[in-house]
Image (tube, rainbow, N blue to C red; front, side, top):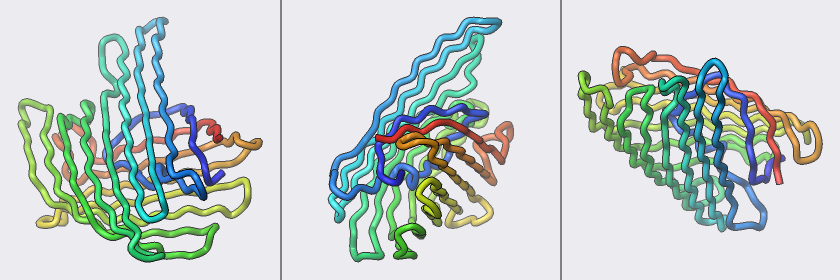
Length: 250
């Protein structure tokens, strides 16, 4: 269940996309240098409401055990009776260079928008070391300490907010496989503004996979996000997402 390219079918309770959990997108592989997946979902529902949804996800990874390139594209648009419930998109490019068995150097670039959170554009550039804290095959722990530049523009004309900041981005990630049928993967991010630590973002993601049959598993995923200073006062500081679904691996 650890080494896979996947098709994922989720039943979502709500949606957020402020901090990308790259740890869940890394694919470990013994032989294949190229791995990836692409999905496109279109939905048109007519009942008491008109519901339209488009979702596109693409993930491509190259890994030769010294260099790792990861490209992610995630677009999601949902509209009910002319009102947008979800309208967001993210493009993420990341590079890892192995320096030693326990240390890698990371660099990344990210662009995103989120209409619901009133983010017209947010661009990130970051770099820093990534440390492997555990050698045990079934219990893996990683620590990342990165520095990133952020440009953010609000979509709210009244707010008209533009920011140029430097933030830290520290994360602790784990992957645990207590049995052959159970996987637990989690990552926690802390991203403070360097010149004002009271302005910070906190994000936590945990996924639990339970194998039902060979290549088929049930997955529960919980996302928690807190932003001390959202783009506008109308945006809640705390957001969360709980999803359940089936995961097919091949």
